[in-house]
Length: 167
Image 1 (cartoon, rainbow, N blue to C red):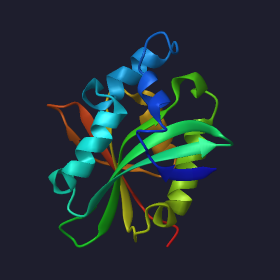
Image 2: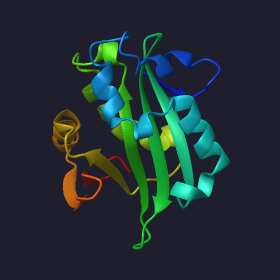
Image 3: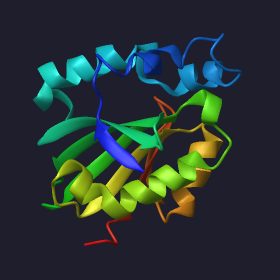
Image 4: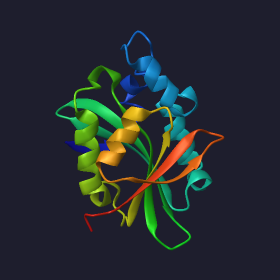
C-alpha cells in the first residue's frame, strides 16, 4: 500500500466517486461526504485555511492499493486540552466501486500502524467523528479499538477515540 498527498491535478477521478452513474454506492458516499463538495474544493479550502479546523495542520491523504487510487482520508492534526497530539480522521472514503471488498479494513489498519510516518508527526491518539447513520464506519472503527467518547445530537455525529498503539 502506498500513501501520498491528494493532488487535484492527478486525483480528478475522486470527484467522480459521488456521481450516481459511477457506482451503485455513490449515493451513500454523497451522504457521508462533507457538504457534498468535491474533494478538490475541500482540499483547496484546507490549504488556504490551515488554522480554521485544526490547531496544527490538515492533511488530505490518498491510499493506493497497487496502482489504483482506493481511498481518501481527510486528517486534522491538533493538540487537545490535555496536551496530547491527536489525529482526527473525517472523512474516510473508499472508492465506491471498490467498497465491500475489505479495502476499508486493510487501509485503516495500515494507516493506524504507519500514521506517524505517513504525516510525519507524533500521534498520541486517533479521533474520529462518524455520522450516526453510518453503521458500516462505526463498526469498522470499533473493530480497531476506537471507543465512543461523545455525541453531537444536533449534527448526529458520534465521536470515537483510540490510543496510538504503535509508538
